Structures are given as structure tokens and as C-alpha cells.
Image (tube, rainbow, N blue to C red; front, side, top):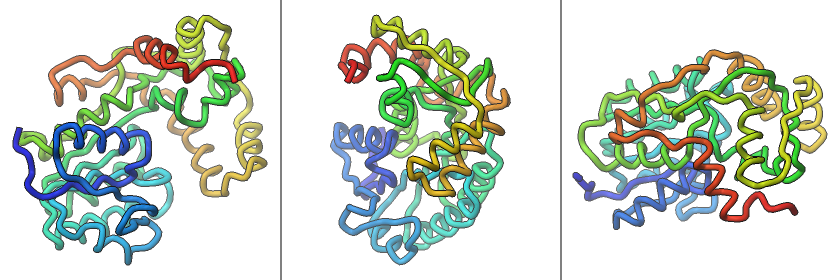
Length: 277
């Protein structure tokens, strides 16, 4: 391993992947800085004045954009950040990107054009959406009420994403690579619910609902309009079967197979996260 002498800035360091990246850097004994509104110095995508202080002295950056690279203006924002990072001496950028999203691909191109050593990590739907994200309440209730049909997804584990990102941040040989990360098999949401039910030993089903009912409920729960629009986009255009294929990104980057959803489900169930509340 070629360990960087300068610290690594981890954007979204409290999120699903950023937290795991930070944990791995700590375990490796490598210096890193949290990139979040509560960090010191603080970082906010919405306030470009916070970018330069957060980048000061950094040698590499893990870029995770909130809420999603698919939202309007994301590519321009990420591109401006990447150019600033290079001007401040950052050598290496690792971008968490979306699979099958046109907006995400524009952001990739903007980062790649910055002049840094760039690695793109494209991810599909996370396993952890069922254990740490918006689907957790549904799992507790035993019913995944989602606007999904029989479309298949190669759910990927956030641990695999973090492992690939850390390899790209700390090792040579990943610059210029685009890693498409998936799990080892395709699953429908109903099949994912079956895996969770098997792991927990209690009924968990998937009940398809209209997209309008799902987004109306999100709005009623106080989600801002841009998030509701993002959900509508993800569950209609991105979840249309375009990603119903496996990719070899984990194998190429790490030399091992990705984690299977069943293994993820057993680990989470053993930890008690899905215990009935």
C-alpha cells in the first residue's frame, strides 16, 4: 500500500458509505478529515465558502454528494469543487456515482476533467437502504410498501463500496478507473423481502403501491420538494430495469467477490437491527 502523507477529506462522513470509509482509514492509521456541516472546519455543498477551508492541506478526497448526483445542478457543483480541490493541491479524487443516471455521468465527466487522479465508483441500490435508510421502518412493520414491480436489482453492500473507495484513495493503480459495483446476483424487492424474512424468522413482504401514493406520502411526511422529485425519478426512470445486470467492479478493484444480500441479511439480523420495535 502507498499511504498518502497528507490527510484525506471524507465528504458525507456521517452517511452510509462515508462513515465506513472513515472507519477504514482510522483502522489503517491514516489521517482524515470529516466533511460535514458539523465538522471543524464545516463543509456544506450549499455554501462554496466552506470548501476551501475543508480542502486545506488535503491530499485526496472521497466525494459523496447529497442528496444525489441526479438532482439539477449537481454536476456543475461537483465540477466546481473538483477544480478548486486541484488548485489547492489535492492529487486524488474518488467520486461515488450512480449507476444508470445521466446526471451522475455528467458529474463524473466534470470531476474527470479537473486534472486530478480520478476514480469513479458507480453504485446501485444499497443493501443498507433496508437497515439504515428509508426502508427500515417498513422492515420493522413487516411490509415494504414501495412503488416497485418485478424489476430486478443487483443490490450492493455499502461495505464493498467503502472497501473499493479506500483502495482507490490509498493505493496506486486505480486512477482513471470506473468501477461499476453490484452484488453477485439480481433480486427483486420481493425477493429481498423474502431474504430478510428468512434471516429474521418473521414475515416480511413487499406490497407494490402506485408511485403517486409513495411520493404523496413522502411529501406529507415533510420531505422537501427536491427530495420528492428525486424519489419520483429514482423509482420511475432509474428503477426501470436499466440496471438489471451484474458488473465486476468489486472483483476488479479488490480481487474478491462482492457480498451477497443473504449474507448481509444474516449479519444485520444477528445484530438486532431488525428486531420488532
